[in-house]
Amino acid sequence: SQQGEEDPQALSIQEGENATMNCSYKTSINNLQWYRQNSGRGLVHLILIRSNEREKHSGRLRVTLDTSKKSSSLLITASRAADTASYFCATDETDFGNEKLTFGTGTRLTIIP
Amino acid sequence: DTAVSQTPKYLVTQMGNDKSIKCEQNLGHDTMYWYKQDSKKFLKIMFSYNNKELIINETVPNRFSPKSPDKAHLNLHINSLELGDSAVYFCASSHGKGRKAFFGQGTRLTVV
Image 1 (cartoon, rainbow over the protein chains, first blue to last red):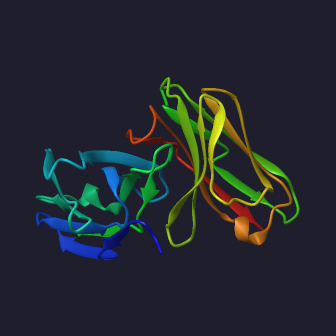
Image 2: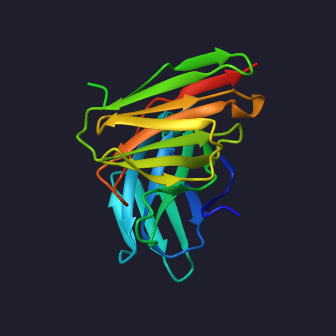
């Protein structure tokens, strides 16, 4: 099974509404990151939250982390058409020397103008 | 100005051929990666290199051979291509474990 799983798999909302995506993971982590992928493009880093942090903000983005439930959420406020993309969470596991990020399955977000 | 660049962007080839994908980063990062994204958009790590040394090889067939001539480059060579190799391959780099990663634009490989 996958380390990170996003929920929902797909989300369509009206422009101006808030979008919330969730991510669950299985192992202990050092940090959790969120990335955006526009269609046909590479991934772009959005925000990183460390395991000792509970909430972090960056512009219209708000990320929460609950290590007891092994889950995170990404909230995008006042959505815009340009926010249409796939969003992935990625975990940096605590396994020493494990030089990789493990990505979730992604949430496909569509903003309807 | 492109931070992580990979070439080619598209690659269409026949089964059995050998092909290479090149990746270069100008960010001064020590760690580089290859990821494979399948048709369901699932991203899976293939290889990780740190200072030109292989750190991670995630159960990838040995038809796939990465090569890092220096810290700024990580190329991927694939022998005897199979239909199942069709996917988008992403190169990425970072300052190291747990740091944010910068991705290339991807190479869409289609094996026919």
